[in-house]
Length: 211
Image 1 (cartoon, rainbow, N blue to C red):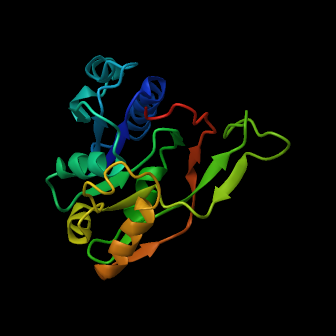
Image 2: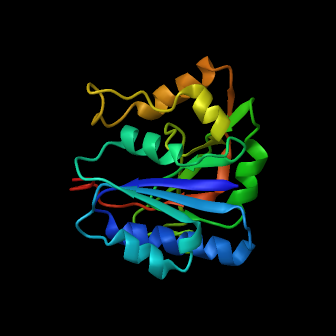
């Protein structure tokens, strides 16, 4: 099983796009091992229960809602703890992605339980470009610095301890991905870092996000 985990606040249109993307993966692959967990800080622009119901994949989606200010660390820790099977894979992912059906086998290939997690390099798209419509001959560029997309077995997540979380860093934004990779290494695990042609990151406006 591969569980896609996302965390949101006031990102309604992107949640709908994400659910459409997952529904397409399910339809194209007929893969019965796909699951989703969504942690929502009571978005004002989204009825999450209704969105999941209308997605056509409600049977594979778990949701958590909570009031308050967005905390990436808290949200992922809580959401991933809903995955109880230590032998399943969790994928910490992003809302603003286009994911193709070949991604699932890519994740399974590069995650080795007790040995290795997967932190793929992804393509960040240029403004107005898409995987099917390049701009100036280019789709985008490889994001070599970010570790925001991470896949690992749930048992390995438990082994690393997840995101470090306390009152001092609860709402801190940035650096938590590097801390997680440090925890992976400290736990005696390796990480696979290769280009993944099955994920594209949409360019998007950052103003007002997560407020």
